[in-house]
Length: 77
Image (cartoon, rainbow, N blue to C red):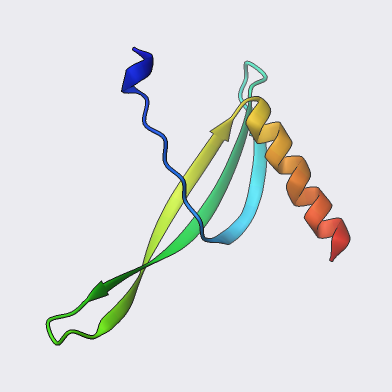
């Protein structure tokens, strides 16, 4: 079954502040929004930017780790 897992890498900008929550089981969940620009050619051959928006949820230890990175970034501002 491990061969059925897909990996996606998104590089973009946050559209809202990440929010750390916990499930009743205690599992951490980090929710954030991400905007990624794509480019495509229109019918006239001109390149046009097209934004794509993603709602992202990260679970477990990765959620805890990423939430600490956000706090560190805020302290450095």
